Length: 195
Image 1 (cartoon, rainbow, N blue to C red):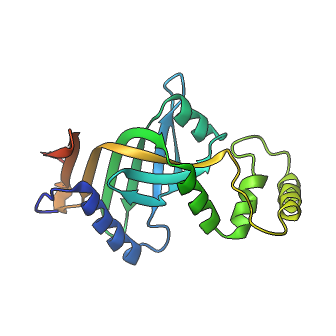
Image 2 (cartoon, rainbow, N blue to C red; image 1 turned 45 degrees about the vertical axis):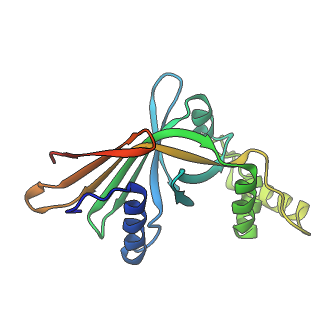
């Protein structure tokens, strides 16, 4: 990034498109950081399922630990690292629910086995045995053997509305390029950072 682009979302999409060509798998994998009510941070990997001017979207079981943390403290941070390109992006922002229609549309675009899995998994809760999970999968597969699998009410999308986006690009001698975009009303202000 020698020239600073005016639109960080367009820049992100361009970097993601490059990463999809060079990363061996899951170029859309991102770390999602949340915090519990005591302020203890928590981070895990999720998959980016949509990005546009409104923000960055992923889907999850809202009864999971991440879902509960996002409900209680609707702020989050995302991190992308594309090792093949020697680039990274960090994002911070507010969290909002995507519409029920968006959640439905994405849920029904998933493979049927993944839809059944969303019903069977009590995400983040203790699992007594692998057999218990397989039994739950079989139970819900039988229950929804015919017709459309409905989306569970607890399974939904969340959008991170970015307030700050930082682009990092590797440079020789650890003199890396860092460009930060900060939401400024309807637009963005930019600043370069020392490595």
